[in-house]
Image 1 (cartoon, one colour):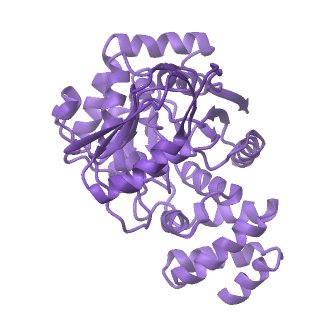
Image 2 (cartoon, rainbow, N blue to C red):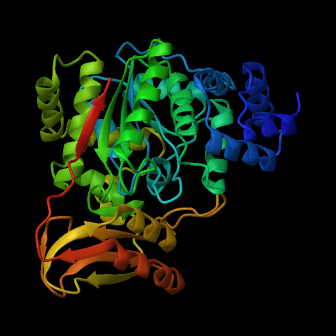
Length: 434
């Protein structure tokens, strides 16, 4: 096998054999193919795509590049959820505890931020002491003990994807249906799940900008799950404007705790409950969505969901005090408000521009080695369809570096438009795939 020949074949539109795919993924995972060659292959796949046979081989090669987890010792049904990534998408943080409190084990394996989208691991690591790096034995033990694990990939679990994930972020090859679907599904199939619920984002702040693209991505992942005997359901959810109010890291943890306390923005709460319904139905602990929602609401109202988050934070080495008192989490030292230029109705609250603005502030990564500032971010104070008055604050930025603030402000201002006529906000749920 020869890496250059494989790159050239895919670059020129040719199909790779299963043997070539297994070899190149295995060699890269073993650090015998350099980043620059894999970057070239990723760009070729980005441009040309993978056919069905290539995609099946790619997923299989990644899945078997390391360990596969065995959760047969956990009696409860095992159901996970994964989001394709969005702006302000902190759903995993309240959802995992809510579902686990209802009797479904949730081995939630999450990732870091990609481009303008936030990452669950980055948010969790704003909690002092919280460990997201768990080896497989500890992961298995914690799942049996708490019913919920919030962690990243171990060094030995799908190592090919862990490396490719960071490389895609740094090489402009994120928005590819074969690469997104293989990344997500290889990790999820390695968990030995009884079911998987996918939150496939669609819109300006998503990697899939159009409903047709997001549906294709959802159908691709549902099909991969079916081929491995894993039931998968997908919701197509809106990402034309940020989800919830907070965009950042520590601030999104604060908002997640609000949801578990029975509050939080209505759009975030609804998407969280809808995904939770699907998880409980797939797990067999609720007969239908109505029964599932009642159980989830009961877990929040009783405090069981909140206490589950406290239990998991403590089990993974974090300081539970910040969950009881989120004001202890990092907060940037300075704030700046962007006011409405005139009165009217907010007609645009662009998730992409606001996501990039948060990244410019330091809440995300432009390069894979960049450090994240946990305390910076922005709060969206008005959404599409809301009436606004001239001078009313529309976005509040939390910043630490004046140079970064200067880079972020034009994007925030561009993200917001005010019109004379009210427009309806986009629907939260664009469709379902199963």
